[in-house]
Amino acid sequence: MTPERPAVLFVCSKNGGKSQLAAALMRDLAGNTVTVCSAGTKPADSLNGQAVESLTELGIDTAGEYPKPVTEEVLDAVDTVIVLGTEAKLDPPAGKRFEIWETDEPSTRGIEGMERMRLVRDDIKTRVQTLRNQLLNH
Image 1 (tube, rainbow, N blue to C red):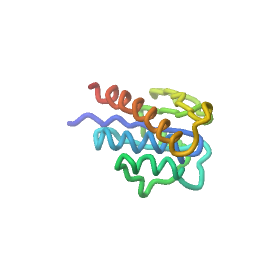
Image 2: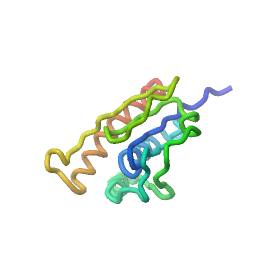
Image 3: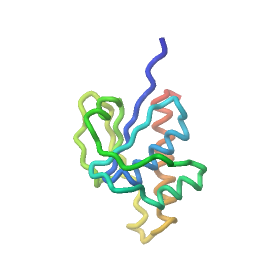
Image 4: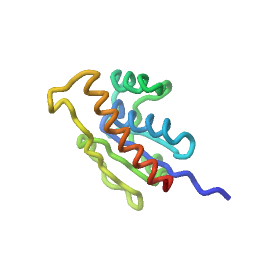
C-alpha cells in the first residue's frame, strides 16, 4: 500500500493572485507528489492578470484555474493549510498544519506592476520550495 500524498491548500482573500501563484508553483515543483488546492475567503471574479503573466514567464500554465471559495470539503481533503498575506482571515482548522505566510509586499516600497508581481512570485516560490521539502521529507 502506498502512503497518501500530502495535500496542501493555499488560501488568500481573492484566490486570484498569491494563493494561485503558490498553488501553480507547488504543482510545478512537486508534480504529482503533492495534492494542491487553492481557495479564497472572498473569491474574485477572475485571476490576477499579472500573477498569470509572472507564471507564464516561468513556463507555468494556469489554464483552467479560477477563483474558488474556501469550503468545508476542501478543508477536510487537505492536511496542510497555508494562508498567504494578512488580508484573508481563516480560523485554523482542527488537526491540520496551519501557517500564515506574511509575504513580501513590494508596493509598500513603491514597487508596482510586473516588477512587484515578480518579487511577490519569487518570495512565494522560495517558501513553496521549503514547504515541498518539508512535506516530502527531503
